[in-house]
Length: 321
Length: 249
Image (tube, rainbow over all chains, first blue to last red; front, side, top):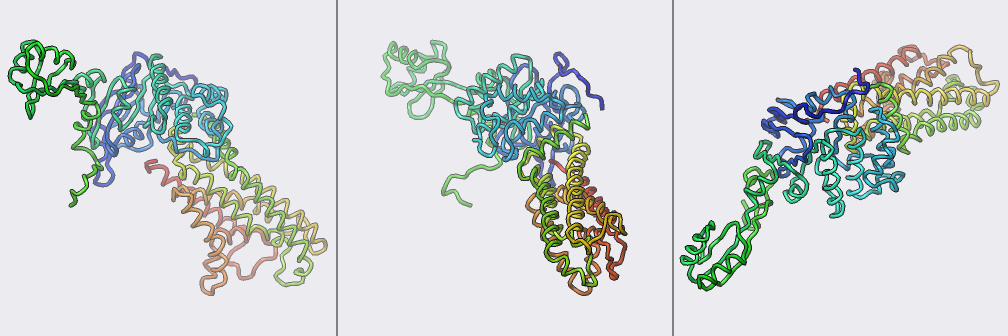
């Protein structure tokens, strides 16, 4: 196979990753069930789903590690095994623990780099990029999970790829590490690269991703921009309890606000601050017994969306059999 | 993809893990060291026995050295599965045949170098210690024995690497191979009825190629013995490939 100086540039030529009708079954268990989506260059695409939703299986199929039962994945228009020296096109972090503990960080990266004819000098560069130059000569066995994640990200960067696939990169990172990763991913996408990261936590995605692909039980539940998802689901509202809810509701509606009445003389007012609601109530002269801001978190929205597709749901105590 | 690059990567993997890097040098030391010890101490006393084989005596340490070679082979492949690194390896080299071939070639070549050093070393050291009871290089069967001794290492390694790729587990492979070659083979050779079967075990067959004083009970010639070991190696390598080729990593 010829591989000399193939262009790693795929700008302008279709999606960075194209998943079409992807299915994976193990025996009679369907883990990935007809996934179709695209990952674009220049943005961080979050791949979100509860544990067991099929995220890792999908990522393994992207890298040619697991064979799809049906469907296919194209990266920059080609199947993974047809990429030539794949690390020059795609960098992946699948499992930060999947390293030999007896190797030093530098040797680990050398083993990977040399197979794709990436010069040894590049190893020093990526170590520098993830801030591991001083630990390069230490054996990986003594590393924390956070350090292993950084090492895994360094390995993904070796070939200066246009596409990055990172499975749960936030796992084990401390807040400082997450901040570092966020800026790092933004820099990568600013350079026109595609970044595809998985997580089972919405809060992580809210920090990192520009676009969301949400799956549950192997099926696509949503393919939406982060902004749109936040607008639709991150509903901030004010709860107000009054002795005269009907009069207060009428007053609020007159002000052009959306109001819903809830149990116990309470109202919920959307897209407004608590101080504004208080001002209106005072102006109307209705006694207010309670006034509070309620945040419906994105995490809640995600939980609702995937509630039916959670593989390992915890049952409340006492609700046995 | 460049074949040389993948070979270089596999060499880097072997060199960079201490236990793997030291296994083959240790096997050389064991074979030569024990050969010298045995030839120097009991060589003259044993020389009167009808079954005395001066060349085989020099390979006395093979019993221990080959366990280290097995460990080397199991670690080379098993480290990939043990840690999950196989996924990184296959994502780096998606052509599985290239990956597997390069790994086996690299490790087998190193085992051949170690085998040549160990086999030549123990032959010359032990024969010079045996003096008048020893043989000279070039005497009947000696060249074949020394060459077979060198080949024994890579052939055994290839078989064990293949079996480890089949089992995809370091512990399982070590737990199967070491007892079988260390215990089952010698024990089987002592049991009437099963004794015939033991001749076809890889270690017994391969080691028969190291003799110059031939056993009249042997069902085949020394060269055939080496070929039987080679068949085992080929079967192991093919078996490992069949599993790696289609299984999800």
